[in-house]
Image 1 (cartoon, rainbow, N blue to C red):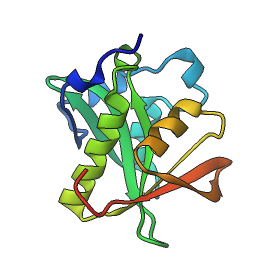
Image 2 (image 1 turned 180 degrees about the vertical axis):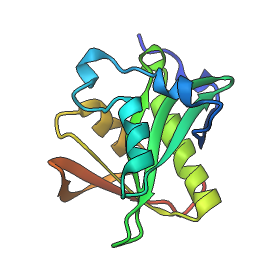
Image 3 (image 1 turned 90 degrees about the vertical axis):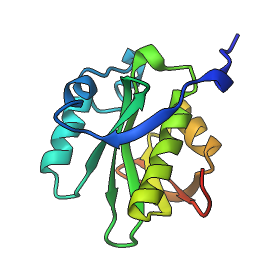
Length: 158
């Protein structure tokens, strides 16, 4: 029986800071997801040192960090890419993934003016595919590093 997600608390996206990075670094996914998602420590290093300009976001439920994602703008088409999306294993199956991605999209639109979004996922990652298609992303036929690319244009508040 699925849990009632209509009672799921509000999820907010916020920058990773000196106050919350340790909670982000401690996040974990289930063992069967590790082949699809880098560790948050790796992604935090990527945000710091990659020339792609990734910016890290902590995903917060009330006073707890429950997930992570990072974002960057593709200079070729100005799409805002999401990457490294993860919800800690203790909070999976509660509807947090959908709320977290929606919160990040809303924040990136409101604070940075982004409205064209893109992301990619491994073709065998059916959980990610269901999540992103459920949010309105559409697969484009593009492939990025052997992953399926999906895009979304947000024209209204999520």
